[in-house]
Each structure stands twice: as C-alpha cells, then as structure tokens.
Length: 429
Image (tube, rainbow, N blue to C red):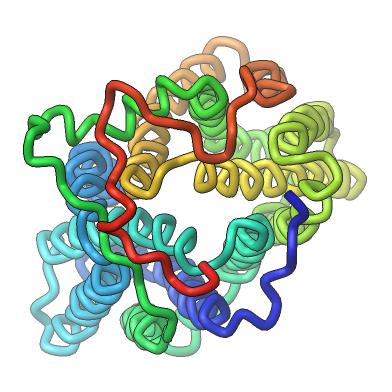
C-alpha cells in the first residue's frame, strides 16, 4: 500500500495539537510533581518511590478492564472525559497548596486518577486514530505522533526545570493541568463524525471479553512476535536505565550538565527517525521496515558501555543514544501502524491496553535484574549485557509477513466480528 502524507488533514491536526500540548504538559509536570512531594509535603525517599509505584500498579490492575470498557464506548467522549478528569485532579494540587492543606495521600490519589485516565485516553486514541485517517495515511500519522513524543522527551524536562525555577513547582503543575484542558478542547473541535462503537456480544463471558485482545494477538503470528519482541526490548532498556545513570556519574565522572544533555538531546534522534518512517514503509513495507529498524537500533548502544571519561566520551555516549533512539522510533511508529491495520475495530482498545499492561508488568522485573547484575558485575558489563539483549530482540521479529496474512486478518474462535451494519464508516476514514 502506497503511503500518503497526512498533511492538510485538519481533524488529525486538531488531534495532534491536543496530544502535543498534553504530552508537553505531562513532561513538565513529571519534573514538578516529585519536587512538590519533597519540598511541599516533605515526603520521604520511600514515599517518593511509592508515589511512582502507584502509576505502575494502577496500569497493571486496570489495563484489561479499562480496555474492555473503552472498546464498547464512543472514543472521543472517553478522551475528553479523561482529559477533564486529569485537569481537575492535577489542578487540585496547587489549589490545596495555596490553602496549605496538601498531603501525601492527596498526591497518591492524583497519581491513581492520572494513571487510570492515561490508560483510558491511550486506548481510545489508538482506536480513534484508525477511524480518523485512511489506512494509506496511518503510517504518516503515527510517525508524526511518535515524533512529537520524542520531541517532548527532549524539550519537556528542561522546560519543566526552567518553569519550576520561574513559577515554582505548584505553578508548573497548574500549567500541566491546563494542558489537558487544551487537549480536551482540541479533540472537541474534531468535525469528522465518529463511527458507532462495536456492539458488545452478550453471549460472551466477562473473562473472555477481558482477555479478547490477548487471545487475538496470540493467535496472530506477526503480532504475537511483535508483542514478545517489544516486551523484551523495553525490558532490556529498563534494565539499563538506573545503571546508565550510575555509569555516567560515577564511572565516567560526567557533570550534572553533561548528564542532562545526554538525557535530553539524543531524543531528537527519535524525532527524526519517526518522521522518516513513512518513506521507509513505502519503500520496504511495514514488516521489513520494522525488522531492519530493530536490527539497526541495537548496535549503536555499544558505544555507551565502551565510552571513556572526558568530552570524547560524552560525545560517544550521545551519538550512541541518538542512533538507538533514531531507529527505535522508526520501529515503534511502524509497529503501531501495523498493529492498528491488522487489528479489527472491535479489538482496537483492548489490544492497545495489552501493550501497556505487558510493558508495565515486565519492566520492574528487568530493572531488578539490572540492579542485581550491576552489583555482581559492575556497571559496564551490565550495560554490555543490556545492549546484547536489545540486539537480540530484533531476532524475535519476522522478516516477512507470516503465512500470507493481510492487514485485516480474520478472527476465529475469539469473538464475533461486529456486523457491518452496526458500525458507521466515517467519510474518507
């Protein structure tokens, strides 16, 4: 399928603008919230860790039921409601701080609400994007969304730190809250009629309905391999995360400024890689593009554990991280597009939340393994092992379409296909 640019698609631009504003706001809030916990609430180190854990636990517990709930609802109202709930919850923090009544329990409640809304919004957005743009524009649309995400990772933390210094942490969280209100408004302005949601099959058990996305993916050879590879890849990256920090600061003696540059600037590689995805998919096809991008992302990371102290080492680590993120973003954009095209509409939200669930559950285990390896072997050998694992995850992917699969494979033995009469096809969608 020849890939077409989504440029000029005003409804997609509204969705893109809303997501970009809320993502940037979240990046800014991610800097401000721990500062509020430490400076305003006087939280302990354990409490800070607990606050971060609430998001992971909420995602693990609610991903399947939330995906099932969103599946059979209109997606735009779900997205708007999630944004408004996040605006209200985050906005309550500076309000409570103004009256000197902010507590650690309050922050925990906000963390749970935000995590719940993030699951609902993400599942609805993935499903709605497929209805909003035509299949030949989907790769370009995902590439643009992915590029914005990487740009947010590059600019957001630095902007957050600057805003905290200028407005205080509580004022910065207020900006984060308002960003979700802007996102809700942008989504509300989308004009293309939304298709009716899938019809719930009342003859299916609740358990079968919850696991519908997992059953579908596991029965689809290409998607199954993509999911396994994705979990292993994100796990290998998580394994190296805390170890990399120690390696930069303790082993290579990088300054805080150099460390900050290495955490932000290479994310531009993700931005450029995502924007080039459409051209690569048009040339190679989605499965081959995913395979080649995944094969090429890992070797760059060997530059990091092989680095030495000094300016050259900083540049070497930056180049390695840039190359990794360039090809990782291309792989992520391609995988998202293929997953959307290969998944029937009545499984879209559940398959999307399955990816979130699998990642959230696996990453803490890999992080723990990384800590144990670093304790026994040291930072440099652990990072070499992590990079070898990143390279190996590409070998789990298929090089070509499996068994003549089509973009929209038939579903058997899992759930009935929603009758065509039950779903309105949006014009041009």
